[in-house]
Length: 277
Image 1: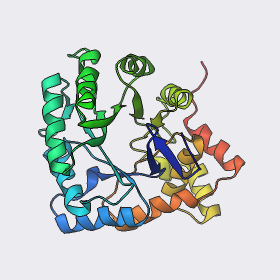
Image 2: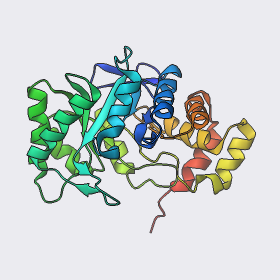
Image 3: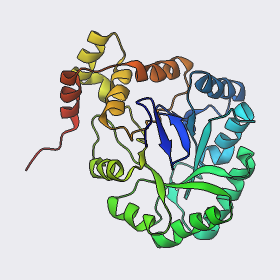
């Protein structure tokens, strides 16, 4: 699963750097800035970039293609289908015909013949999970999708999906202060599944004294400490922090070089501990 502490292998064949980039915040209203940020991420060694068909109604995928196509060797563009964002609301939409349509559009926007990783963005409660994952499996069988992943799922849902096709990644919300997906992460560890925490830097982290104390001692930022804790938490973790700032991007990538002491790691871990009732 992980040849070294700085990389992991998705699905047995995609070796990526363990600090990814969430592209959702690329500025659609400033294409030049968006292109520069995506290119800078790759220059810094990022090889896993996460997008979705629903980000800016597909424009996010187009921005990545405009910036990076033809993609440098080793760069993996992961996208998602199964959720629409027509206005302020995020709406799960997992009908098989919709998933197929969105995958076809992603192929066109990203300018590829096969999607390296297509993740089910959200499970649609109105559609049997088997039908949703089955649609992704059919796209695999047709050679349009290499690997399948899931997002915001339970251990039970992962197991159900695994009976249909191998699941190589799970993207759930997880950070220093939000560990509701701890059981999912532990399941991913046992089964060699990459775990992609979204919102890896909790908004409240900067006010937590153990974080700021560790950051001060290490000469780092609170965000870097939060990311370093995630990277040490498990070898299957691949954080995907997003930003519209080149400076923050550079700081995030530098977190891979930050070494936490055992004492700091344990103290930070207690921030999200679930009280025993």
